[in-house]
Each structure stands twice: as structure tokens, then as C-alpha cells.
Length: 397
Image (cartoon, rainbow, N blue to C red; front, side, top):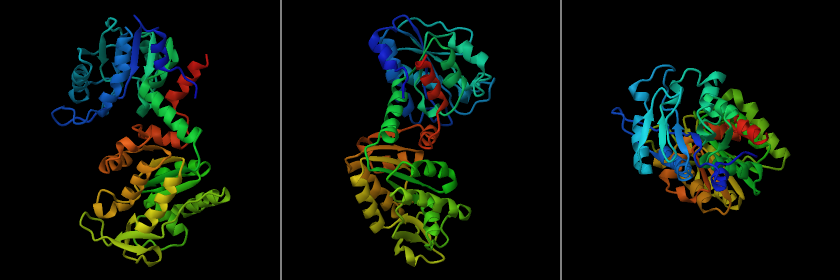
């Protein structure tokens, strides 16, 4: 992937006195009083801002927050709490600017935060006039928001089209490098774990990966559909009967390539879905009509962990059981620890996956943790991310 890297512009010393516009992802959770409850995204955005300031640039930063109505700024949609937190992290004042489209006063060495960009009419529709207006505010546009890279909006795509220079910030660069390493130039065996409640939600990902990976581990409700497609009983487990043929087709694609979709040999069942449900380990052939499969069994987990330990690259999206309940979390824990202790490069993404990584305290043992959400999933599907595509086009000019 060829695109201009912000780090290269910094290294060239070409930013002094320049107006730098950074599209960050500062969409943090707030409580009912408007206090930030978790600031990971703000802290992750600091390096790009700090680098621009140190390079002598006049820095403007913007982001979306929540789901505002275009043209109307409500108190709960304001980036005011973010401005305060950024000031603390940067050790200098970060003024919040409203009504900023007609011009921004900011001097070299200063940074201002531009109010919630999704309040601007035309933002989500990638309006060309709005994009040109924003591009006129800067000399260099920096996209550092991978989480919105799958959306063609004015601050992710349009401004990059019209700004004098458009580049990728350190966060976006790291995501693209990691994803490129995992899927573009993987060390084999390439193993993917795709889990979730429904095949339908990840069907395109499963199909895309079936043409690439050496092992495709399915988990959660997705595994139930594959088990039924393989002729195994699943009791009253979550399943999608209309996608059995799709599951069989994916298994056939893998088989024809000499690759595998491992089907569980044992599972953990319960009669009810509840935090205090009694967990029972059963061979797959012994699943009763009133059983719900809520995790893979220990024998299956051990076999899959062995495959993971031998993998050169692991892509992980989704827990393989209801890990929120400890009695149904052992399968996910076993695979998570295998990934953490494996020698291969690992990349993980998706909200539930990140929660599992945090629960089992393996954050520092995952090669790269993507915070992109929808962008991560669309990349796995093989889709072109609009905000990345425009940066590549600009780099080619």
C-alpha cells in the first residue's frame, strides 16, 4: 500500500509554519454529566498532535462524537470534555473552536480543537463544497482515524481529495501496516478465528478468508451453523438454518485448497442461557435436543490451541464462547493464551475480542490490536476503505 506517511513529512522538517489539519478519532464514551469514562482514543491520538506541534506546525484537530444531528450542536455532542482532556495530556491549552468553517486562527506551536465535525451539514454525504472549504483551511491534511476509514465523509475522504497534501497519521499507518502484514504478506500457516452470534453478520468475511487462510476456526453461534451443516446435533443452540448451504460451500472451498475448518469434537452445554447456568461438557454426538452449546469443549480447545501455536500469522475476530460467563469462557481463554504465547504475528479486532483480551490480561502479548471496529471488519472482507483509497490516489499523483 503506497501512501504518504506523516512521519516522513516530520522527518523531512517540512512542517514548520504549516497549517496541519488532523482528523482524529476522539469519539469517547461520556457519562450523563458529560464526563469522559474511558480516554484510550484520546491518548492514542496524542502522538500525531505532539509530533505536529514539535515540528512547528499550526495544528487543527477535529473528530466526530456520538450521533449529532447535522446543523444542530447539542451540549452532549460537544467536544468540550475532549478539549479539556487533550489540554491535560499535551500540557498546553487546547481551545475549542465552534463555527470554524470560515477560518481558524491558530499560530505555529498552537493546537485548537474544531467542534464535532458531524454537526456540519454535508459531512456524512461527503459534500464537495464542504470538503473544499475544509481543505482551504490547511496546507497538510492528516487522517489518523482508522475507525472511520470505511466511511467516505467530508473529513475522511473529501478533504483528502482537495488538500494540498494528504497523508496518513501514525495510528492509521500502524493499522494499515499490521493488516497488510497479516493479510497481504502473511507468514504461513495463516490462521483466522472468526466467531460471533451469526454467520450472516460475517458471511462475506468468511468467504474472503476461505480463499486465503490455511485454517479457519469458527466459533460461537457461527460454529453451530457449521456443525449442523456437517450433520452434527446442536440441540436448541443459536443457528441459521437458511445458511447451511453457505457453510457447506465455505468448508468445500477450504477443503479443495487443502485447508481446514475444524469442527468441534466436544462442546460445553447448558439448559438455559444465564450467568448461573450449569455447564456440562459433552461429545458433539451427545448433544441433547434441549441443550444450548455455549462454548467449545476442552479437547477441541486443546487441538485448536496446538494449531494456533504452529501458526505464522493469526487473525482473531470474536470469542468462541459466551466468555462473559466464566463457566463458558474456558475455550476463549485457552485460545487467547495460545495466541499470546504463540510465535506467530497476531492481529486482533472487534469489540468482544478486545473485551476478551482485557479480561485475560494479554494486551501486551498481541502483535497488534485494531481499534477500528467496522473498518477492521471491512478490511478482512477484502473491501477497499474509501479514506485509504483516496490517500493512495493522492500519493500516486
